[in-house]
Length: 331
Ligand code: NAD
Ligand code: UD1
Image (tube, rainbow, N blue to C red):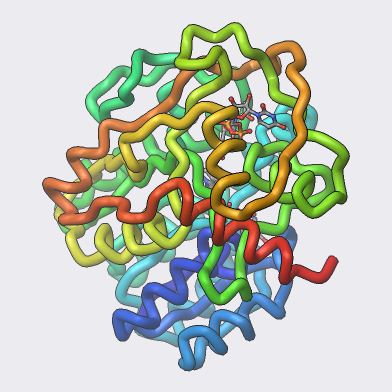
């Protein structure tokens, strides 16, 4: 199939493009490179040993998107393009609402006009808010405390309403847990802007000596060792989850958790990283980070049942591949 991958030069998108190419799909990437580099597109082609078509365009640009749909027979869309920094979304909410919502609507309109009925959307476990773990797709969503989370919940609603109104439309709303790791080649991975906010990229920078020590945000949560628990998922498993979602799309809107179902605390992750890589990760305990919840992990049984997909890679391989990429990466 010809798959339009928006945000395909980004972290999760690039790994998914490789997985799609491996499965024999053709890939057209639309990315404005606001948080990625064109070299990544070359690396995708190197890894997969296949060509991809790349357009440096903004997905909110309806004209530019229309011309792609006009020129190619698009069979399906995977929509990754979006802004994703939670803290930044509080400071510049309008950029987040505009970018993340308008891009979804522009794509949905083009799909309607060109009768493209396969759509896969990047949502986030953040839409569950501070619910009871494990998070199940049927739970009522709790309000998120930031505009980023709102854009995900709203995009889910928009796509769900479109599916209700169009009996031919099929959309998978994929709620990712915490993607980490990198392709085993070390060629593509996560490249955060500036000082990382997220745990794994921070840990790899500490291991590399670029940052002095990890700041562990709180050790008084009701968890195994008092530190926050998350469901880390290898980005390669996540990428394969997208191929499975595309292969198993069914009419209507369907929500799937993409996680391992396994919780790991901050200190457990530090220990796993040290064990996997034989490096030290010095840390200090600080206050809780505002907005954080104690525990977040998936009930991943629906994706297993309906998409025939489960995450296969363990926390050790996530730590090993994240470190392999960071060591290789030239700033
Ligand atoms: P990323 O920033 O690495 O990739 C997003 C890509 O989209 C970038 O290449 C960026 O240049 C591009 N982009 C952004 N706005 C665009 C626009 N208007 N037009 C064209 N391109 C645009 O992020 P990622 O980690 O790969 O995340 C991909 C998607 O998954 C995002 O929608 C994100 O919100 C969602 N998500 C990510 C995580 C995570 O932890 N990484 C968790 C849950 C959900
Ligand atoms: C964050 C986002 C979430 C998003 C997810 C994507 C917030 C509040 N939430 O989730 O919306 O979907 O990223 O991956 O930003 N930690 C430290 N020290 C650090 C960094 C993190 O101790 O330097 C701890 C956190 O307190 C948390 C865990 O590590 O317990 C994971 O944090 P992080 O990687 O930022 O992800 P989330 O907070 O789960």
